[in-house]
Image (cartoon, rainbow, N blue to C red):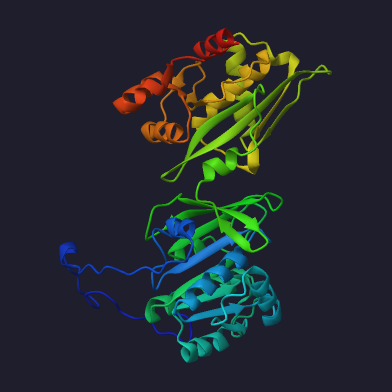
Length: 419
């Protein structure tokens, strides 16, 4: 692959045609820069690594430019040289947003430019420590005939910024638009070229936003940061479980709390199920935040293994707060919510449940059981329904809170007795 024009490739390591033993490679502790937000630092693996190339993707209006402007404001106010290059907004528009957010960031250097040649000259002049490109789809090089946003332009632009980041030790943030499928627009090679890929998740109408790391060469993947959109921009949520469970109804049937793992973080969520006798011959099945086919599978398991006649009922399942859950560890919560809604029995308020459900009706083990139980106890839950096979993974001090279950029929029998 030919090097981008205007930039020569720099040879690093032992030199051309030379090799060295792994243990001979010198280790250097790279000092990370804090973004001023502990949630974002967590997702990045502890902060911004100098010389890294970071891609941030998400739907329009979800907060990509907002959070980067907040981060740039914090960094520039603390002595870092920040260059913000916008290809979509005028400098006046960015200034207006900055005033609306906090008014900080007066030391940010701004430019409205899309020509890569001009941007390279600007970088040589400014010599920033941090640089933001908003967005990568607006950048272009004149000697490439295709339009900005095309595959060739996006690939070339990313290659240029990758070389700038590595050779000049500048941390570069690239803002990327997403397609209808939720992937960053442009070639998939774009994600392979960068060091870190962060995705914004959440509905524009919801208060919360999630930032998830799907690739990180300097930290763990699948870590998430939770933020709340406010008039002053994105505000980090330090206790997301409490935030997600706020407003939970009391003594309402079909309401169950479960624990899912987002990276290394346990997150408590409320799952609701409404089971209502159908007025038509064909019952309706609706789900929000959880896979529709998974709901149908669990309904079939309940009918076959626990003798619940759900074929005469409409079933609606929802994860509150607009969260999306794809983990099978939420299966037991769905089962408990459906049983609670079917018998119209409120699920115990201080009880939490998690576990995977198999087609034979068995409750299967899930990962990081002890972490989930500890998080539940820390937040005041007095009882945890969990797979019987996972009880051995729980510390002795926390086993008194555990109620192990082996099969779906055991769960149905347990809840019906309590009602």
